[in-house]
Length: 322
Image: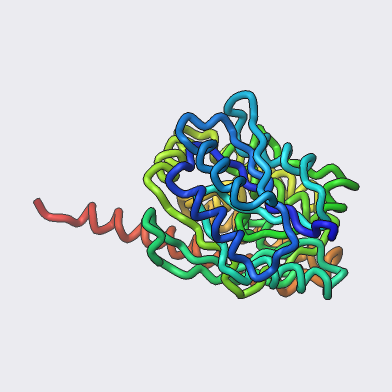
């Protein structure tokens, strides 16, 4: 039987979790898949753990990078190694609910106008204990395209997509967008293809001390903000939104991670920028009008709250008696 799903797993120093990750895939109710694991220069016993699982199940295939190349390079390499109709993503420290692959294969088989499907997820700790459920509020293709104007709304480790899209259009992860390569990839993917998020839990996302440390390291300086700006600049240009320079800069500030505007003047510039975006959306993308309006109002209210909170905090500080 021809394999229909390739599950791609970049692995780097995941010896504590990779066995559990692989076992969660072997426990899937859907069986017609292969597992492509690419070790990205691990310095622990990850390779030995993976090889022990290969002895149990020949659907697991191990490849190795010559040295540590990063997750974007490794995912791009996985695209070249996959042989199946569908590509599913997994991270080496996460796990998948038993029905994940079955749900996604059935969905893509019955919705030929959809080229990618993700879902909601649980956050778990290092021991695999439940912390929090995250339901993706952006579910329809229209709401996803609208939300990507402002932030990422796709849980990468929950995704399955059609391989032909990757082959035909050569969509790849950008190694220059380090730690935001997922966001950049999905912005480009939805340019010509429909993506949908299911409300079903499709991923158990593990938060570890190592992952938190890497995230903090990646956030140093202004590089992360610059990468956010580059992605949002691309979105505006690709979709034809033209904003005056000052309005564009305020839009960038508001749409960064933990972004905020600093005063009343910027608040009114943001309001004007969002008005232009909504007006243009109504003219060129009427199918996105309601979704973009909803996300614009959401951002507007968030920034308004932050601005007022900052103002009153400073006011209390001035009036404080010592």
